[in-house]
Length: 294
Image (cartoon, rainbow, N blue to C red; front, side, top):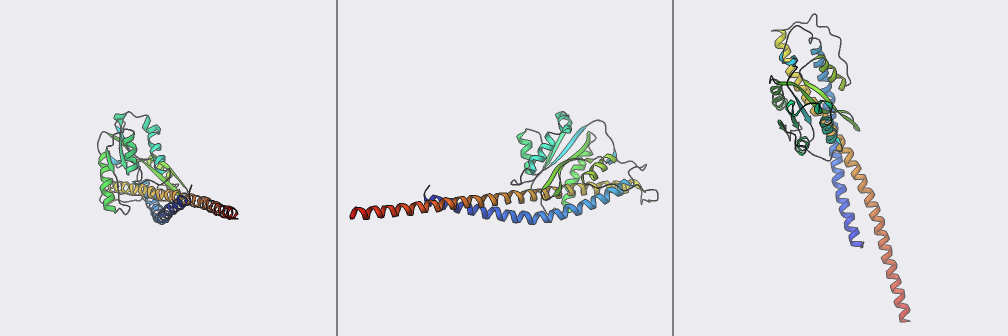
């Protein structure tokens, strides 16, 4: 390899390193932002679920707690819109398509809703029909924008033929650890509350609803509470996804930057060897020419 080719390779790797380093810093900054959002939303969701737990065993009935023995199951698969975030999307996709809940159902008994372009691509590659898709969602999603999506998810469950709705989203533990979780979104039940708080590593408070009063009625209050909790669960899963995505991207770009450093070091060593060989060859040629002239 000539000196010019080695210099071009070093320049190209240095330019790539600048990009990966910049992406690492951006991902680290956004990771902190969504980590705070995910943790604060967890506390809010836990508080709401505890309020609901106080009244879930009341005599009031709601369509949000209706247990249906027949019908199709709707799966909501979360993923990122962009790549370069390690194994995040692959883990989420495998958590659904390799799960017992998915495999045991016939194609007519399941529907898929995808959130994120990578989930949509995975469904298309597996030739799985997509019932609804939500891609390129704003990272600064407002409550009103979230409510529009949650309303569509709730409308799916309000179909009498729908048995239940499940979420497949990551649980963010720390910058290096996340794992996919399959959770029931609707209907509400004691098992559903336990599964959500179990995933959040929290516990329900003891029920003390004897002295609780409702205005105008328990049915109206609980229906509004179900809707608010559904919105909070959707946002919480989205923030967990973004925190996991940027943590994975930060680590991936850090590894890419370190690999670029190693390549630059090896190429620089090759450049020095090639330069030394060229100098040695020139000296030998000069010495040979001088000896010939004498």
